[in-house]
Image 1 (cartoon, rainbow over the protein chains, first blue to last red):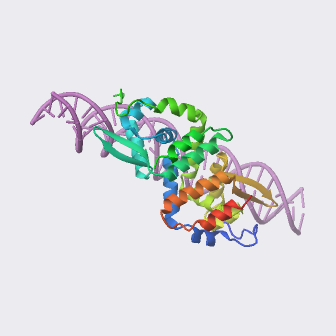
Image 2: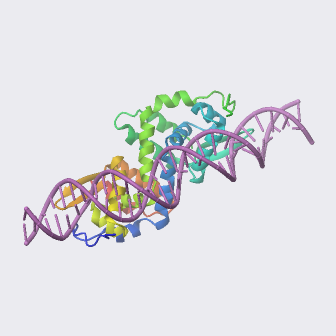
Image 3: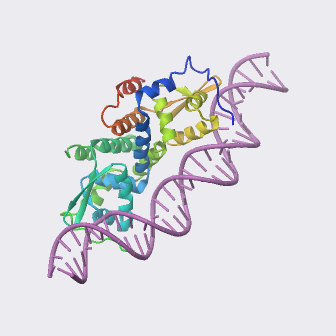
Length: 131
Length: 131
DNA sequence: ATCACAGTTGAACAGTTGTGCAAGTGTTCC
DNA sequence: GGAACACTTGCACAACTGTTCAACTGTGAT
């Protein structure tokens, strides 16, 4: 194991000291958890679905052409990271995006992924005007 | 396999039709790839490091107390998703955040993860004023 | 040209994660 | 109460991912 010693590529290493002051240790791990939950195609599709408004599990299952159980499992991951809200409405359970931060994250990534003409203006307005 | 049929929890399913019009199919997969790359503690630490300015691999290795090879492998994942820039400077190779979108994503997630008093104002200004 | 330095890459192994199935809640309606 | 509906959860298995080590590439100095 060849550990690295003495960079010498920068005047002084401003890195390790400053970073510690900027973000508290736990924040990075939690942020990583959020990204990990969003870092899956099927799960991200669910989030974009919810970006257009609340939906029940059955509704999402039909939209995705998937088993109810599968959707529920995906939602569990998103719930564990606090990305979605959940409320019961009679027989159904309605899911939605947890807050504006999540909608922003979603919008930002889609914009970056679309690179150019995403035509997400309608999507953004839909999610922003939600609360 | 119990496929779901007929939601009946919403007036009509506005979901599948609208979503297709909003984001092109490939965008979600690419966005998921971005999130997946950021969804790892060690890799995300690297990005926050780069959020404070460019750094060479050795510098990051010392800051993280890791092997050079390990850091390089992590950077490869970030590079494959277009999250970091790379340029040679003599013996060293300097990495940086690819663009403002990445910095925004990073900032947003850290803000959401810190929930309250992140004190990220300095971080944001550092990354925003970069170009 | 040779040596040291800086970084990359491929392969193998261990740990993690997504999915499908079966069995389990909780709610509404009769 | 009981049946039907709308989910949820635990488990097992396959597929993926991160790390490590060794070998390799490219740059700068002697």
